[in-house]
Image (cartoon, rainbow, N blue to C red; front, side, top):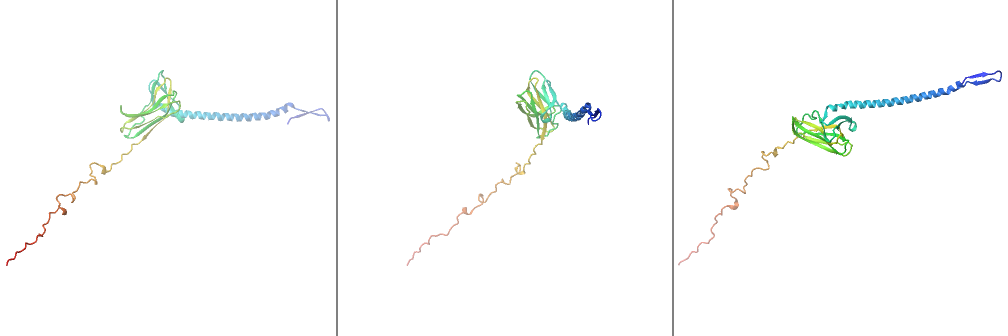
Length: 264
């Protein structure tokens, strides 16, 4: 409450209000309101900064985890290899043409991705790829090796019409057991200073189909019960006489006896 001062005497006493005291009271209320708003604003800033810090930390952890890709893959001369954000939250390997002319960019695994093959098993390699140069053809390729000898291979390609992600797939059936399979990512005629991203590389295997055993009846060396050697039948045997071909039996004579002549 504002303080009052009295002046004069008797009935005519005038009460003077301390203006300074009266003026300070509303400002005290305003100070409390300003402080409350400041606390709320500071809390919001802390929440925002904390969320941003947590997001940045998560991104850093993800990049640190995927940086091992650089130790597993390499590129040939004329291109560089870096890490960037990839397909569906993964990390991509970016191959950049650092020359002033077009070239075929090749992403190669340092150690063959399939270390031991099984004859007849089907191996599939796929990846999501995009480029800064629409019209570039890209592919995934699989090559089977025994030592330095190439035993076969297969590739699957797509044409990148724009900058969107596309998925080339290559499937290959191993020709032998104990070989290895080299996996590559390719970009043909990549223009100067253009790049191609390779993300989410996946390799799967399908075991060979078991051979169906052949029934014994189908073997060429086994006689079939439905094809026995023909057995002679009585009707076709030449040595067995039949009733219809017996020699004729002689019959009694039917001629009359000669007439006797009488004499007197």
